[in-house]
Image (cartoon, rainbow, N blue to C red; front, side, top):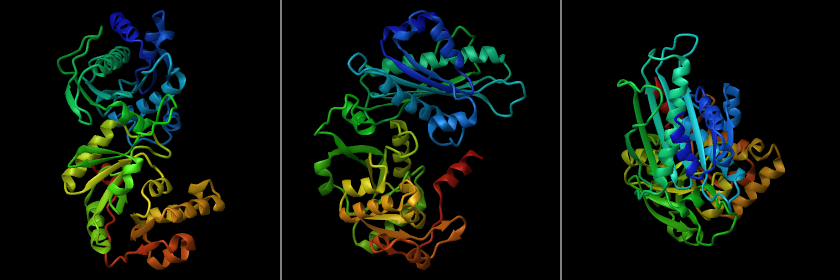
Length: 414
């Protein structure tokens, strides 16, 4: 890697953790080959096999060499960096993630490519590099990707001090330097989004561990833009009375149809709720949130999106008491399944009791589960009484829209 670039990153005095797979291991080796690396280098991980990647991320990615997976690596690396670096001596840390598909000992059908992402409390940067196929050896591609990762980290450090609009994706071509020749047919791009300190605390928690009475509990989005933040004390009065929670990756006609029918049945507007934090996967980064909100704005610009940090239903219900939540039959069955409460029926019942105390109710829409349509009679027989009595059920002849966000993503990849 370029020694001058290494020294620039060292001079920024910003500790970082890095995780890379499919390529990019040279970044770790060469950064540490220059004396003084321990001042900024916290951890380097190469989860090279698919099982190692799944273990590091907590779930299998849909594509192992993609920008999304690089961002997920960066988010996990960032969380580890915050745990590993003392707040008093390093208030700013970075998580660097990279994935690649490079020259191998067998012919590759797809492009030779690399993705790098950098996560920090000031925002996220994601770069992509499409390499000219069959123009270099594996060693040459590795060296180029190492420089690409280093320059992406430097780009992120520079963005920290620049005055950028908040909660907005910016993109450009990415001109970076390397000791390897960069060919005219190589293509590099970079995207980034910035947030402020309160937004970062909302997404990732307070790094110094100190409670903040002014902390954000939710952010309301309209027409693809972050409109207003709400503290916990303000949320109950401001938020709508009926809510459709989901990942919205992407939003689709099924979501829109559910809100329309739910609004008609309940005689109140229905808003969407997206949790930035996940139970078993890395938290969403700002670019992921912005992109989902913008797709929603295209599908249904009239709908509000409420961004929260409540991944579980019980947390949503306690943050937003006395609400009606619109859910599919598959979701209500998961709420009843002890598997999602530590395989403990008492633990599940304790969760259901908390839901009842919060005044949560559920409007349940028909869905197919494992290829079979779940009937209302099956649900009423299966669900515990404590949950069933809080549910109203919509029959399949009233509504049946088995659109799946995951199926849409799979079709887009073909």
